[in-house]
Image (tube, rainbow, N blue to C red):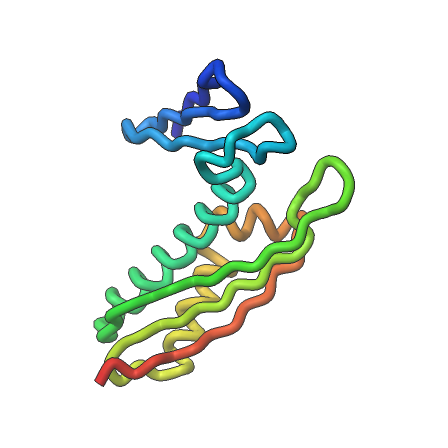
Length: 140
């Protein structure tokens, strides 16, 4: 996996070019010289982690032939007060929608993501306390 991050030359805006040929813009807050034009780098870490675990949960449920129609992961993170301002706590709230989804099946998918598949959250668990909650919505 590769990524190149280039400063725009203006303010605190950066463009990341990924190995899969996608571009992502990041920016800082005005009080740090940014213009608030894009997400902060640490927001990107949090978003990537949410995407990683959501991907896992949907894939696990689909492979089990469960009728999942939506998956939303809301993450709330706390950071250390001093540098390096690592994440210290992250709560993941999964809202999984589908037809006839069983709580134990969805919870198992979340657990598999948390314990085995989501490399981003497993990495962040080295510095942060991770908690999870699950809500199931019937799409019937």
